[in-house]
Amino acid sequence: MDSNDIVSSSSSNDIEAVHNKFNNSSATADSESDKKKSVNNNHISATASNSGNNIISEILNNHNVNSCKSDIKTITDHWQNGQQLWSLSEDSIYAKDSKTIVTVGHPSVNSVVPLDLLRYIYLPEHPHYRLFDSGTRTISYLKARSFVPVKSLSLCEKKRILVTGGAGFVGSHLVDRLMLMGHEVTVIDNFFTGRKNNLDHWIGHPNFELIRHDVVDPYMIEVDQIYHLACPASPPHYQYNPIKTIKTSVMGTINMLGLAKRVKARFLLTSTSEVYGDPEEHPQPETYWGNVNPIGPRACYDEGKRVAETLTYGYMQQDNVDVRVARIFNTFGPRMNENDGRVVSNFIMQALKGENLTIYGDGQQTRSFQYIHDLIDGLILLMNNDYREPVNLGNPDEYTIFEFAEFIKNEVNPKCKYTTLPATTDDPKQRKPDISRASEFLGWSPRWSLKQGINETVQYFRQQMAAGVI
Image 1 (cartoon, rainbow, N blue to C red):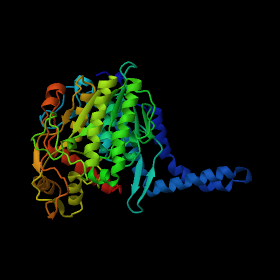
Image 2: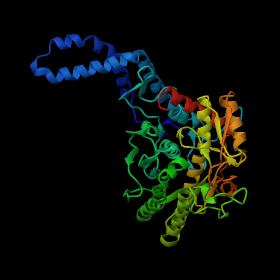
Image 3: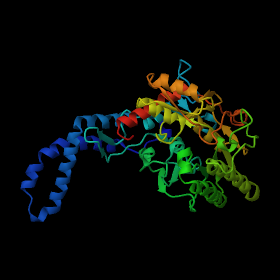
Image 4: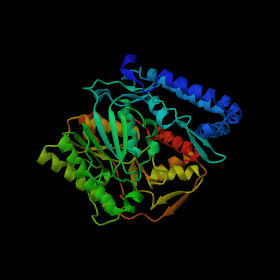
């Protein structure tokens, strides 16, 4: 791949300026007292400015200036070497040992991205542009910004893409991939469950825009594709305000479908395996209509997504809107909310804290867990494919909750014990996707093993705890 096909948003002059800033920080502090002696009444504003610089110097000294220089050099090295990562062959999914994944994405839709480049974003050795002092529990933010290299696309190749709910767990990973592919990405999010930190590494990039907005209100923008992810997806969050959840699924979907109709954009709805309810057919194919309690505690989410699917196909049949629907099964990975009530984050956080693992019911209910990169591969493939029927995206490897708890215990903290509580209302007894349709029409199947995904997720939560974020 020719390096001319890659563009980075920082120049060598920018990086040199960052180095100069930190190299000169000590000299600035040493000369501060001399400057103050020469101040007169005509230089009051200069005094205030110098005082501010002195405070910044003290902060940097407290955080160890040499450490700052090392961090900036690390950022610089990644920026300079990032372009080399793109030289990996698009056919190189696995390393020479045939087990280690080195790229994600699919060549058929030009979504191949080096895994190390993604890991630098969501599993950095040093937090991007941020210094955390564990003693005082304070954070200093560095103004200097650089961005990892992204693909350089021609105007006819570059798409304008809207991602609703793009600051959330799934949405932020989708944004990372779309940005690295070279597209222009606009995110709208009301930050009910989404976090700005998930997208902080893109803020200021010429191809990126982040807007605080609630999809229950109309939004006008010119785009080519719409990924509609906005909706709380974990039980504690969608049950916190059931009416708001329904409004997001219904009114939000109507607004985004109306936008797609107006600008003739392709629309992808991220639906859920919850539309199958507590299934009586196993595994669940897309042709299964489901077994849902319409008045239970989960109904605001289950029925909301079922209505969203109905609206999506209504707009397709009546107004010829170009639509796609993905039914997403249990997904895990970095950037999961640590207190979202999902079994993966619950078990990992409890194990890391040395607490008992909480199992609801007898632990024999089953779940299938897919890693986030596999899901993003599937979403991009579906958006750029001509198939219009609903498609299951999940990993068909099935585990009982007790088996999964044992796995987390052995991987994270073998000293953990178990606490058993009564089963939650309308909790599905089994959940496993039939992915025949995704395999046949998209050429998609999950690549990541449970062990590989859990290792990265545990590493992420450990970093978050060390950084004082959780």
